[in-house]
Length: 417
Ligand code: CTP
Image (cartoon, rainbow, N blue to C red; front, side, top):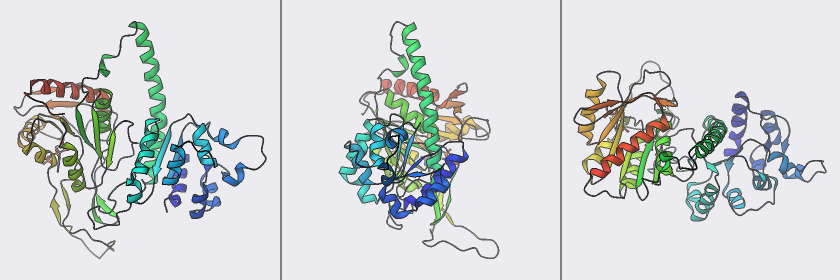
Protein backbone atom coordinates (compact mmCIF):
# COMPACT_ATOMS: atom_id res chain seq x y z
CA UNK A 1 0.00 0.00 0.00
CA UNK A 2 2.76 2.41 0.97
CA UNK A 3 4.32 2.07 -2.49
CA UNK A 4 1.42 4.01 -3.99
CA UNK A 5 2.56 7.05 -2.02
CA UNK A 6 5.98 6.95 -3.73
CA UNK A 7 5.04 9.17 -6.71
CA UNK A 8 3.89 11.84 -4.22
CA UNK A 9 7.32 11.80 -2.61
CA UNK A 10 9.08 11.96 -5.98
CA UNK A 11 6.95 14.88 -7.13
CA UNK A 12 7.61 16.86 -3.96
CA UNK A 13 11.35 16.27 -4.14
CA UNK A 14 11.45 17.42 -7.76
CA UNK A 15 9.34 20.49 -6.98
CA UNK A 16 12.06 21.45 -4.48
CA UNK A 17 14.79 21.12 -7.09
CA UNK A 18 16.11 17.61 -6.40
CA UNK A 19 17.02 15.23 -9.25
CA UNK A 20 15.49 11.86 -8.46
CA UNK A 21 16.33 8.40 -9.73
CA UNK A 22 14.12 5.44 -8.88
CA UNK A 23 14.88 1.83 -8.11
CA UNK A 24 11.74 -0.26 -7.86
CA UNK A 25 12.02 -3.57 -6.03
CA UNK A 26 10.08 -6.60 -7.20
CA UNK A 27 7.69 -6.13 -4.27
CA UNK A 28 7.10 -2.45 -5.15
CA UNK A 29 6.18 -3.42 -8.71
CA UNK A 30 3.46 -5.69 -7.35
CA UNK A 31 1.74 -2.56 -6.00
CA UNK A 32 2.57 0.17 -8.51
CA UNK A 33 3.44 0.32 -12.20
CA UNK A 34 6.83 1.28 -13.57
CA UNK A 35 5.08 3.86 -15.70
CA UNK A 36 3.56 5.79 -12.80
CA UNK A 37 6.95 5.89 -11.09
CA UNK A 38 8.75 6.95 -14.28
CA UNK A 39 6.22 9.74 -14.83
CA UNK A 40 6.85 11.17 -11.36
CA UNK A 41 10.65 10.73 -11.53
CA UNK A 42 13.38 12.05 -13.81
CA UNK A 43 13.30 9.37 -16.46
CA UNK A 44 13.46 5.62 -16.44
CA UNK A 45 13.01 3.34 -13.47
CA UNK A 46 15.71 0.82 -12.61
CA UNK A 47 14.55 -2.66 -11.66
CA UNK A 48 16.13 -6.07 -11.15
CA UNK A 49 15.39 -6.71 -14.82
CA UNK A 50 17.31 -3.64 -16.00
CA UNK A 51 20.19 -4.51 -13.64
CA UNK A 52 21.05 -7.58 -15.71
CA UNK A 53 20.77 -5.87 -19.09
CA UNK A 54 24.10 -5.54 -20.86
CA UNK A 55 25.13 -1.91 -20.23
CA UNK A 56 28.40 -0.03 -19.96
CA UNK A 57 27.74 1.02 -16.32
CA UNK A 58 27.13 -1.07 -13.20
CA UNK A 59 23.73 0.30 -12.18
CA UNK A 60 24.11 -0.23 -8.44
CA UNK A 61 27.33 1.81 -8.47
CA UNK A 62 25.76 4.58 -10.55
CA UNK A 63 22.83 4.83 -8.16
CA UNK A 64 25.13 4.72 -5.15
CA UNK A 65 26.68 8.04 -6.25
CA UNK A 66 23.48 9.83 -5.14
CA UNK A 67 23.67 12.55 -2.46
CA UNK A 68 21.05 10.71 -0.39
CA UNK A 69 19.08 7.47 -0.60
CA UNK A 70 15.48 7.28 0.63
CA UNK A 71 13.67 3.96 0.95
CA UNK A 72 9.98 4.79 0.71
CA UNK A 73 7.82 2.05 2.16
CA UNK A 74 10.69 -0.08 3.44
CA UNK A 75 9.72 -3.70 4.11
CA UNK A 76 10.99 -5.95 6.89
CA UNK A 77 12.65 -8.00 4.16
CA UNK A 78 14.71 -5.16 2.68
CA UNK A 79 15.74 -4.06 6.18
CA UNK A 80 16.94 -7.60 6.89
CA UNK A 81 18.86 -7.82 3.64
CA UNK A 82 20.56 -4.46 4.22
CA UNK A 83 21.36 -5.29 7.85
CA UNK A 84 23.07 -8.53 6.84
CA UNK A 85 25.01 -7.14 3.92
CA UNK A 86 23.14 -9.01 1.19
CA UNK A 87 23.46 -7.71 -2.35
CA UNK A 88 21.19 -10.02 -4.28
CA UNK A 89 19.00 -7.42 -5.91
CA UNK A 90 19.57 -3.92 -7.26
CA UNK A 91 18.21 -2.14 -4.15
CA UNK A 92 20.33 -4.04 -1.65
CA UNK A 93 23.45 -3.94 -3.86
CA UNK A 94 23.03 -0.14 -4.11
CA UNK A 95 22.71 0.11 -0.32
CA UNK A 96 25.98 -1.80 0.05
CA UNK A 97 27.76 0.61 -2.26
CA UNK A 98 26.39 3.92 -1.02
CA UNK A 99 28.33 6.28 1.25
CA UNK A 100 25.74 9.09 1.30
CA UNK A 101 23.07 9.40 4.05
CA UNK A 102 20.33 6.76 3.94
CA UNK A 103 16.78 7.41 5.15
CA UNK A 104 14.49 4.44 5.80
CA UNK A 105 10.77 5.08 5.80
CA UNK A 106 9.32 1.79 7.00
CA UNK A 107 5.80 0.67 6.25
CA UNK A 108 4.66 -2.56 7.76
CA UNK A 109 2.19 -3.97 10.21
CA UNK A 110 2.84 -2.78 13.76
CA UNK A 111 3.42 -6.38 14.94
CA UNK A 112 6.06 -6.93 12.29
CA UNK A 113 7.79 -3.63 13.08
CA UNK A 114 7.87 -4.47 16.78
CA UNK A 115 9.28 -7.98 16.24
CA UNK A 116 12.72 -8.24 17.88
CA UNK A 117 14.28 -9.38 14.60
CA UNK A 118 13.08 -6.26 12.77
CA UNK A 119 14.03 -3.99 15.68
CA UNK A 120 17.50 -5.56 15.84
CA UNK A 121 17.98 -4.99 12.11
CA UNK A 122 16.87 -1.36 12.41
CA UNK A 123 19.18 -0.87 15.39
CA UNK A 124 22.10 -2.33 13.46
CA UNK A 125 21.45 0.04 10.56
CA UNK A 126 21.13 2.99 12.98
CA UNK A 127 24.48 1.99 14.41
CA UNK A 128 25.95 2.41 10.92
CA UNK A 129 24.52 5.92 10.79
CA UNK A 130 21.34 5.19 8.82
CA UNK A 131 18.32 7.40 9.56
CA UNK A 132 14.70 6.37 10.13
CA UNK A 133 11.42 8.21 9.73
CA UNK A 134 8.49 6.43 11.33
CA UNK A 135 6.50 4.27 11.14
CA UNK A 136 3.86 6.43 12.74
CA UNK A 137 2.11 4.72 15.60
CA UNK A 138 -1.56 4.97 16.54
CA UNK A 139 -2.54 6.67 13.30
CA UNK A 140 -6.20 6.36 14.07
CA UNK A 141 -5.80 5.54 17.70
CA UNK A 142 -3.59 2.88 19.21
CA UNK A 143 -6.09 2.51 22.03
CA UNK A 144 -8.11 -0.04 20.16
CA UNK A 145 -10.50 2.23 18.32
CA UNK A 146 -8.54 2.48 15.06
CA UNK A 147 -6.78 0.23 12.57
CA UNK A 148 -3.59 -0.14 14.61
CA UNK A 149 -1.35 -0.39 11.52
CA UNK A 150 2.22 0.91 11.52
CA UNK A 151 1.43 3.69 9.09
CA UNK A 152 4.07 5.15 6.79
CA UNK A 153 4.99 8.82 7.17
CA UNK A 154 3.26 11.20 4.74
CA UNK A 155 4.92 12.15 1.40
CA UNK A 156 5.29 15.79 2.49
CA UNK A 157 7.11 14.73 5.67
CA UNK A 158 9.31 12.25 3.79
CA UNK A 159 10.40 14.85 1.24
CA UNK A 160 11.14 17.36 3.99
CA UNK A 161 13.16 14.80 5.97
CA UNK A 162 15.15 13.79 2.89
CA UNK A 163 16.04 17.39 2.10
CA UNK A 164 16.74 18.05 5.80
CA UNK A 165 19.20 15.17 5.67
CA UNK A 166 21.06 16.77 2.79
CA UNK A 167 21.21 20.09 4.62
CA UNK A 168 22.26 18.33 7.83
CA UNK A 169 24.99 16.52 5.93
CA UNK A 170 26.51 19.69 4.55
CA UNK A 171 26.15 21.40 7.95
CA UNK A 172 27.84 18.54 9.79
CA UNK A 173 30.64 18.62 7.23
CA UNK A 174 31.06 22.32 8.04
CA UNK A 175 30.98 21.58 11.79
CA UNK A 176 33.50 18.77 11.27
CA UNK A 177 35.77 21.12 9.35
CA UNK A 178 35.47 23.87 11.95
CA UNK A 179 36.10 21.28 14.71
CA UNK A 180 39.25 20.20 12.93
CA UNK A 181 40.30 23.85 12.67
CA UNK A 182 39.56 24.42 16.37
CA UNK A 183 41.41 21.25 17.32
CA UNK A 184 44.43 22.47 15.41
CA UNK A 185 44.35 25.92 16.95
CA UNK A 186 43.95 24.61 20.51
CA UNK A 187 46.55 21.85 20.14
CA UNK A 188 43.95 19.06 20.08
CA UNK A 189 41.85 20.07 23.10
CA UNK A 190 38.33 18.59 23.06
CA UNK A 191 35.38 20.88 22.49
CA UNK A 192 34.19 21.55 26.07
CA UNK A 193 30.56 21.69 24.92
CA UNK A 194 30.60 17.94 24.27
CA UNK A 195 31.99 16.89 27.67
CA UNK A 196 30.11 13.75 28.81
CA UNK A 197 28.64 15.48 31.87
CA UNK A 198 25.27 13.69 31.51
CA UNK A 199 26.72 10.19 31.36
CA UNK A 200 24.49 7.68 33.16
CA UNK A 201 21.48 10.02 33.19
CA UNK A 202 18.25 9.06 31.39
CA UNK A 203 16.86 12.19 29.75
CA UNK A 204 13.29 12.13 28.37
CA UNK A 205 12.35 14.79 25.85
CA UNK A 206 8.93 15.40 24.30
CA UNK A 207 8.72 17.23 20.98
CA UNK A 208 6.45 18.35 18.18
CA UNK A 209 2.70 18.82 18.05
CA UNK A 210 -0.06 16.39 18.95
CA UNK A 211 -2.94 15.54 16.64
CA UNK A 212 -6.41 15.22 18.06
CA UNK A 213 -8.59 13.44 15.53
CA UNK A 214 -12.20 14.52 15.09
CA UNK A 215 -12.80 11.68 12.62
CA UNK A 216 -10.42 9.36 10.74
CA UNK A 217 -9.18 12.10 8.41
CA UNK A 218 -9.48 15.39 10.32
CA UNK A 219 -7.62 16.60 13.34
CA UNK A 220 -6.80 19.60 15.53
CA UNK A 221 -3.10 20.38 15.74
CA UNK A 222 -0.52 23.20 15.67
CA UNK A 223 2.52 24.09 13.57
CA UNK A 224 5.22 22.87 15.99
CA UNK A 225 8.20 21.58 13.95
CA UNK A 226 9.80 19.55 16.76
CA UNK A 227 13.18 21.22 16.13
CA UNK A 228 13.61 22.46 19.71
CA UNK A 229 12.98 19.02 21.25
CA UNK A 230 15.19 17.24 18.70
CA UNK A 231 17.98 19.73 19.50
CA UNK A 232 17.65 18.97 23.24
CA UNK A 233 17.71 15.21 22.54
CA UNK A 234 20.80 15.49 20.33
CA UNK A 235 22.63 17.74 22.77
CA UNK A 236 21.84 15.39 25.70
CA UNK A 237 23.02 12.41 23.63
CA UNK A 238 26.28 14.15 22.77
CA UNK A 239 26.82 14.82 26.46
CA UNK A 240 26.59 11.13 27.29
CA UNK A 241 22.94 10.81 28.42
CA UNK A 242 20.72 7.92 27.38
CA UNK A 243 17.88 9.70 25.65
CA UNK A 244 14.23 8.88 24.93
CA UNK A 245 12.58 11.28 22.50
CA UNK A 246 8.79 11.08 22.38
CA UNK A 247 7.64 13.03 19.37
CA UNK A 248 4.42 13.95 17.65
CA UNK A 249 4.25 13.99 13.83
CA UNK A 250 7.21 16.01 12.53
CA UNK A 251 9.28 15.76 9.37
CA UNK A 252 12.61 15.27 11.13
CA UNK A 253 14.37 11.90 10.87
CA UNK A 254 15.18 9.95 14.05
CA UNK A 255 18.44 11.24 15.52
CA UNK A 256 20.95 8.37 15.61
CA UNK A 257 21.73 7.08 19.08
CA UNK A 258 18.40 8.25 20.53
CA UNK A 259 15.43 6.01 21.37
CA UNK A 260 12.57 7.56 19.42
CA UNK A 261 8.90 6.94 20.15
CA UNK A 262 6.53 8.46 17.58
CA UNK A 263 3.00 9.19 18.76
CA UNK A 264 0.08 11.27 17.53
CA UNK A 265 -2.36 12.18 20.28
CA UNK A 266 -1.86 13.82 23.70
CA UNK A 267 -3.12 10.62 25.38
CA UNK A 268 -0.48 8.56 23.58
CA UNK A 269 2.12 11.20 24.46
CA UNK A 270 1.19 10.95 28.11
CA UNK A 271 1.46 7.15 28.13
CA UNK A 272 4.84 7.19 26.42
CA UNK A 273 6.31 10.01 28.54
CA UNK A 274 5.05 8.63 31.86
CA UNK A 275 6.42 5.20 30.98
CA UNK A 276 9.82 6.57 29.93
CA UNK A 277 10.00 8.96 32.90
CA UNK A 278 9.93 6.13 35.47
CA UNK A 279 13.72 5.84 35.64
CA UNK A 280 14.52 9.29 34.19
CA UNK A 281 16.60 11.93 35.93
CA UNK A 282 15.48 14.73 33.63
CA UNK A 283 12.27 15.36 31.65
CA UNK A 284 12.11 18.23 29.17
CA UNK A 285 8.63 18.94 27.78
CA UNK A 286 9.01 20.91 24.56
CA UNK A 287 5.93 19.27 22.98
CA UNK A 288 3.14 21.61 21.95
CA UNK A 289 0.38 19.50 23.46
CA UNK A 290 -3.16 20.19 22.30
CA UNK A 291 -5.11 21.20 25.38
CA UNK A 292 -8.32 19.58 24.10
CA UNK A 293 -9.44 16.53 22.13
CA UNK A 294 -12.76 15.56 20.61
CA UNK A 295 -15.14 14.28 23.27
CA UNK A 296 -16.56 11.76 20.80
CA UNK A 297 -14.29 10.91 17.94
CA UNK A 298 -16.27 9.73 14.93
CA UNK A 299 -15.18 6.35 13.59
CA UNK A 300 -16.36 7.25 10.05
CA UNK A 301 -15.47 10.31 8.01
CA UNK A 302 -18.07 13.00 8.70
CA UNK A 303 -19.82 14.40 5.63
CA UNK A 304 -20.54 18.13 5.59
CA UNK A 305 -23.96 19.36 6.61
CA UNK A 306 -25.77 22.58 5.82
CA UNK A 307 -25.04 25.36 8.33
CA UNK A 308 -22.78 25.56 11.35
CA UNK A 309 -21.47 22.60 13.28
CA UNK A 310 -20.47 22.38 16.91
CA UNK A 311 -17.52 20.27 18.02
CA UNK A 312 -17.55 19.11 21.60
CA UNK A 313 -14.02 19.15 23.05
CA UNK A 314 -12.82 17.71 26.32
CA UNK A 315 -9.58 18.64 28.14
CA UNK A 316 -6.44 16.56 27.68
CA UNK A 317 -4.40 15.61 30.73
CA UNK A 318 -1.63 18.05 31.62
CA UNK A 319 1.43 15.82 31.33
CA UNK A 320 3.93 18.20 32.89
CA UNK A 321 1.61 18.81 35.85
CA UNK A 322 1.11 15.06 36.25
CA UNK A 323 4.86 14.49 36.36
CA UNK A 324 5.21 17.44 38.74
CA UNK A 325 2.65 15.97 41.14
CA UNK A 326 4.87 12.89 41.57
CA UNK A 327 8.23 14.48 40.92
CA UNK A 328 10.65 12.29 42.89
CA UNK A 329 14.18 13.55 42.35
CA UNK A 330 13.61 14.39 38.67
CA UNK A 331 14.41 17.73 37.14
CA UNK A 332 11.35 18.89 35.16
CA UNK A 333 11.54 21.55 32.49
CA UNK A 334 8.64 23.06 30.57
CA UNK A 335 8.28 25.43 27.65
CA UNK A 336 5.60 28.05 27.29
CA UNK A 337 4.47 30.35 24.56
CA UNK A 338 2.79 33.55 25.65
CA UNK A 339 1.68 36.66 23.82
CA UNK A 340 1.35 38.86 26.90
CA UNK A 341 2.39 39.07 30.59
CA UNK A 342 4.87 36.32 29.74
CA UNK A 343 7.08 36.18 32.83
CA UNK A 344 4.26 36.31 35.40
CA UNK A 345 2.20 33.72 33.53
CA UNK A 346 5.21 31.42 33.03
CA UNK A 347 6.16 31.65 36.73
CA UNK A 348 2.60 30.77 37.65
CA UNK A 349 2.75 27.78 35.29
CA UNK A 350 6.08 26.64 36.76
CA UNK A 351 4.54 26.74 40.25
CA UNK A 352 1.30 25.06 39.20
CA UNK A 353 3.11 22.27 37.33
CA UNK A 354 5.98 21.97 39.84
CA UNK A 355 8.60 22.53 37.09
CA UNK A 356 12.15 23.62 37.95
CA UNK A 357 11.94 26.30 35.29
CA UNK A 358 10.12 27.19 32.13
CA UNK A 359 11.63 28.54 28.95
CA UNK A 360 9.27 31.16 27.68
CA UNK A 361 9.11 32.22 24.05
CA UNK A 362 7.01 34.51 21.96
CA UNK A 363 5.27 33.28 18.80
CA UNK A 364 5.42 36.73 17.27
CA UNK A 365 9.22 37.00 16.88
CA UNK A 366 10.27 36.15 13.35
CA UNK A 367 12.58 33.15 12.75
CA UNK A 368 12.10 31.88 16.29
CA UNK A 369 9.71 29.45 17.97
CA UNK A 370 7.41 27.56 15.54
CA UNK A 371 9.46 26.13 12.68
CA UNK A 372 12.47 28.46 12.96
CA UNK A 373 16.07 27.38 13.52
CA UNK A 374 16.60 29.99 16.24
CA UNK A 375 14.92 30.68 19.50
CA UNK A 376 14.82 33.66 21.80
CA UNK A 377 13.73 32.53 25.24
CA UNK A 378 13.48 33.78 28.80
CA UNK A 379 14.22 31.37 31.61
CA UNK A 380 11.50 31.76 34.25
CA UNK A 381 11.74 30.16 37.70
CA UNK A 382 8.78 29.35 39.97
CA UNK A 383 9.77 32.23 42.29
CA UNK A 384 9.26 34.67 39.42
CA UNK A 385 12.95 35.40 38.84
CA UNK A 386 13.90 35.36 35.18
CA UNK A 387 16.79 35.61 32.76
CA UNK A 388 16.38 36.69 29.14
CA UNK A 389 18.74 34.84 26.80
CA UNK A 390 19.83 36.38 23.52
CA UNK A 391 18.64 34.99 20.21
CA UNK A 392 20.43 31.65 19.80
CA UNK A 393 20.21 28.60 17.58
CA UNK A 394 17.93 25.92 19.01
CA UNK A 395 21.02 23.75 19.61
CA UNK A 396 22.61 26.56 21.67
CA UNK A 397 19.38 26.96 23.65
CA UNK A 398 19.50 23.19 24.28
CA UNK A 399 23.10 23.50 25.51
CA UNK A 400 22.26 26.27 27.98
CA UNK A 401 19.13 24.48 29.11
CA UNK A 402 21.14 21.36 29.97
CA UNK A 403 23.81 23.48 31.73
CA UNK A 404 21.02 24.81 33.97
CA UNK A 405 19.68 21.28 34.49
CA UNK A 406 23.13 20.11 35.62
CA UNK A 407 23.40 22.99 38.07
CA UNK A 408 20.01 21.99 39.55
CA UNK A 409 21.02 18.32 39.75
CA UNK A 410 24.16 19.27 41.67
CA UNK A 411 21.99 20.92 44.32
CA UNK A 412 19.70 17.87 44.66
CA UNK A 413 20.42 15.58 47.64
CA UNK A 414 20.11 12.50 45.42
CA UNK A 415 19.60 12.51 41.67
CA UNK A 416 18.08 9.48 39.97
CA UNK A 417 19.54 8.13 36.73
N1 CTP B 1 1.98 20.65 28.62
C1 CTP B 1 1.72 19.36 29.01
N2 CTP B 1 0.46 18.85 28.86
C2 CTP B 1 -0.54 19.61 28.35
C3 CTP B 1 -0.29 20.94 27.95
C4 CTP B 1 0.99 21.42 28.09
O1 CTP B 1 2.62 18.69 29.49
N3 CTP B 1 -1.74 19.09 28.23
C5 CTP B 1 3.35 21.18 28.80
C6 CTP B 1 4.00 21.65 27.53
O2 CTP B 1 4.78 20.63 26.94
C7 CTP B 1 4.88 22.78 28.04
C8 CTP B 1 4.12 23.34 29.22
O3 CTP B 1 3.25 22.30 29.63
O4 CTP B 1 6.11 22.31 28.51
C9 CTP B 1 3.37 24.62 29.00
O5 CTP B 1 2.37 24.45 28.08
P1 CTP B 1 1.26 25.58 27.79
O6 CTP B 1 0.38 25.07 26.71
O7 CTP B 1 1.90 26.90 27.60
O8 CTP B 1 0.53 25.62 29.18
P2 CTP B 1 -0.94 25.48 29.55
O9 CTP B 1 -0.93 24.94 30.93
O10 CTP B 1 -1.66 24.71 28.51
O11 CTP B 1 -1.42 26.98 29.62
P3 CTP B 1 -2.32 27.88 28.68
O12 CTP B 1 -3.51 28.08 29.51
O13 CTP B 1 -1.51 29.12 28.49
O14 CTP B 1 -2.56 27.13 27.40
